[in-house]
Every structure is written in C-alpha cells, then in structure tokens.
Image (cartoon, rainbow, N blue to C red; front, top):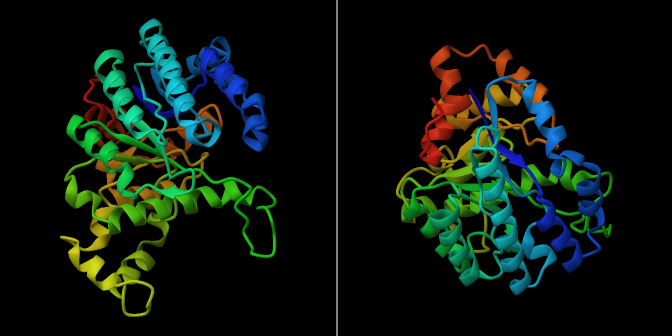
Length: 331
C-alpha cells in the first residue's frame, strides 16, 4: 500500500466559487487552469490505476484562501471546499481515504470553527496552512490557537510553501523573474517558517505537535550543519533583538526541534534529497508524497524505490507513518 499524503485537488464547486470571488489570479490562475487533473477525476483515476495499491490524501492547492478572498468569503469558500472533499472521500474511499481541511487564516474565529466542523462532522484528518498568512508569519500569536487546536486533536498540520512573483529577488527589481519565486522561493519560505516556529517555542508549548513540511523540509535538512552552527552562535553577532534570551528559553538544542517536523518525499523524482531528508528526519518522520497532479507520481515512486529501503522502513514511509499521523489504519 502506498499512501500519497500530499496531493492536491480543486473541487469544481469550490473552484468556480473562487473564480467568482477573485477572477484575476495571475500566475497562479494560469497554473490552476493548465493542470487538468485538479478537476478531472476520471483522468486522475486512470493514472492512479497504474500504481496498483495506491491512494491519495487530498488537499486544496495554492493559492491560500486569505490571498484571494475577504475573511467572510474565505470561510465560506473553505466550507464549500471541505464539503466537496468530504464528499469525494465518501464516494471514493479507496482512492481518497482522507482529506485535509482548508481554512481561511485571516478569519481565525471562523478557521477554528471550521476545523471543528471539518474534523468532527466531515472526518478531516488534519488541516493545511501556508507558510505565511497574507504576509504575516505563522508565529504571530494570532495564529497560535490553530496550532493549539490541532495539538489537542492530535492531528497533523500540513505546511505548504507560498511565495509569489511580487516578492522580488533583488531590491532593484519589482518582481521575481524566471519563476525563481517558486523554484527557490518556496523552499526558502518553508525554511523561514520552520525557523520562526522553532525559535518562538511552538514545540515546547505543544509537545508532540505534528507538522508535515512539503518537499522534505525546504532547505533545512540540506543545511543541517549551518543551521546547527547558526543557533550555537545566535545572539553573538547581531544587535537587532536579544536573540540570546530567545534561544535560552528553548528547552533543548534548536536542531532537535527541526527533527520533530515531518518531511514528505515530494521531490520530483530526485533521489539525493530523499537520502539527505531520511538521514535528517529519520525514517520515523518521513512520509511518501508526490505533489500530484503538479508532479509525476511515477517519478516519485521510482525515486523511493531507488533508495532500496528494507521492508520495515519502506512500510513506515509508504503507509505506516501516515496512518500513525492521521490515526488511521492502512493495513
């Protein structure tokens, strides 16, 4: 059994409602239009059939609801999307055994209420958030109640990167060119969000909280030594804030917290980053994912097979860890 824990879908009702609310989506709109399997279930099922005992956990794709709606619209759109995804799970349980709830983070009261409804009434097995909320960091105290609620439920937070071409790479330019904003901007965005959540003590406040980072934890595993060293000297080289006091409030070395995140294997078929991520997170904190339909399922499975994992480790990554995270059985 292969459980693909991070795939995307855009139910027709939710997609049409979003277009009515925000008709000009720019680059993201073009991206959504050109990926037919976001909407075409029959084509999606034909592709899935090629991989045998294979299923998908579904979630909405970019854009974050807070980027394209007002707070009231966002909560309404989240309800429509969650109802539709729950219906897909009910109708196709062997294809889609679970869905990840969407929320509008700029309406926190509405988001918390929608999490309760999605989990208790619809059977959602977690919630998806993006690496910033309309330009605000996830460690803003305003968003802490969401992490607390998911910790209380014991269900995961799916962490998806977001960055747009409006965030330029150089001060002399108005936009990020050559799609750098997604090629390198998204791993950077994930890394920044992880650092901020660690430094501000999320894992100390909520021990055992489950956060799945898309694309194997951004840049963190690949710069393990740099991250560890930077935290060792944090506060000695800057005058911006009292970083030493912040660091000293942590209950353990910072690098330990980064290993508490989960990394998914959605690396577009590349093997080297999978090896690195497995060594960093350990097999207990790695889950299989493809990022379908934006990436090739076949390439991701082939890359996982090239790791030549022992049967016990392979089972953990393909299904066991996903089951433990979502409190489900895939045996």
